[in-house]
Image 1 (cartoon, rainbow, N blue to C red):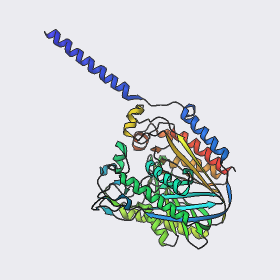
Image 2 (cartoon, rainbow, N blue to C red):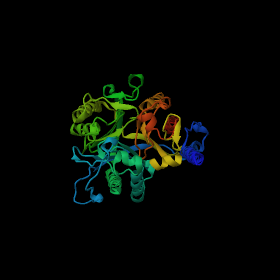
Image 3 (cartoon, one colour):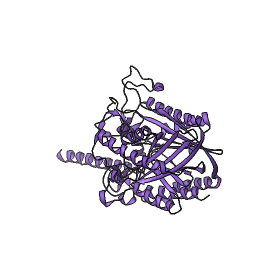
Image 4 (tube, rainbow, N blue to C red):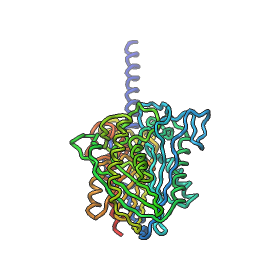
Length: 468
């Protein structure tokens, strides 16, 4: 009798062992270390890039520019949801997972979508910044579809970015990861966000007038730090700006800086644009015209405001605005520029969501946690001797330094911005991949070679766009 019971127990244990082993084999795999340049996704992307290069030319001539803005701030605590009017009974903030999807309590300072349209000859492009954590793919796609139908704009003509404030509207993320950072999914949040983008772009294009262009930069190392490895790492201290001035005197300023917009913590439950909002308001109040902030290469780069909360955000934003204001009067302007745009659909490797340094979830299981993505998008705008590069991620400020240096050596300034209408996680230096932590482990979604892959594509696109 006892031997029979023992055999039954052994069989049960063996069955459990086999089941667990089968689950592990089915759900887990080793990290994919195959060289990216030998993979099909690389070949597909390079083929598309060569086709674009063969048909894309530069346009030179007189510049026309137009400016537009749309209020993005939602109205919360409304009796009922009316997304078309931006009214919601409740809407979460996006940015910090420790808020656990709690709804916003009100508005500290308004959020906007702002757009600058540029036309040289028959070539038209729009540069847009939103006071938001990111511009999600579904929002960008919805806005792009409407703009193509209404205005004939192609995706490569839309240069998108966000301020990366962690106190903007949420509700646009779907799935486990999306709702962890943006709160419970509400379809109306997406439609409101997309509508605001369309409204700002439409206004900017309708405002096109003869204009002049100038650009510059200054170093602001006191407000940025390497938040990943501290003084062992490098930082990009450059604040880049571009100025567009219409013949009637109206003006717009585009500004970009690498420090994360995380001066405000997760304890803040009101809508706010963080330090980029203070920068924009200070520039506009000083007579600098419409100010548009585009988050720079914020990967591994944190803010150093001197103090936390709204006082720190105000101190940092206003100081950067003063630095800019000192340089605007000396900025050389011209109404004749070279203008070129280049966009590229980028095929992605399989998901590499890791549970340890060398073990990942199999892509089919990772896809249950993250929205499946086969392609993303890279983009380059050339404005005379300045190059603006948009990326779909928290792009590394350290990685950006090499790209900037390569363009500086050819006589071009370079600005690299994040959150261009998609989000594929953090793209930071390859040598950090084996570190534990938020950026290298949790938020590096597509494996160890994505930094090298994007770096190669960006350099190729940038060199192509300045070569003609």
